[in-house]
Length: 210
Image (cartoon, rainbow, N blue to C red; front, side):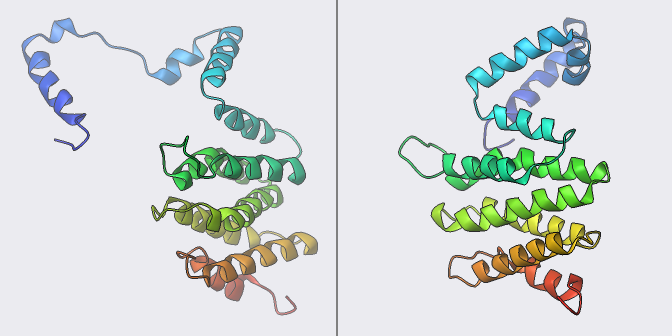
């Protein structure tokens, strides 16, 4: 019934539903409830949430960039800050690599949003920065959960997909360098498969001159 003790409560509730269905009420989904609220009320709610959970500010920042010209420099700074905030300390009661993934996940979603908008070059830049910074900080985030390695692999694969649609020579060079660095990082004893996808992408997606 679930090691975390959650599912047993669902099971225990079912007999009550069978015997007293009229005691239950139907609630609208959270999405529907939020869409019915005035904009000002939603802003106030969001600010209170960020006050209690400051990491949510990254989600707001990343979401806002999906509708504005992408500036790589501050974006890299934001991603760097997320990884630095996850550095091990006695204050953290969670795996630092898991925290890092949670903190940078909004930027992966930003890349996916840019792909859906047809902004392939911007999406490639986001995936490149995530792969680059992820590989750079990986050795400094101990533990063997594999969450960060899996996340970087995902970013690398998305970067490879984006590379196929990128024609700008400078951006292509940046992407290829990032992929190569991911491959090299994976050669280290604690590489944990970071560059599993990078080698094949380099072989398949690079052009003869490259």
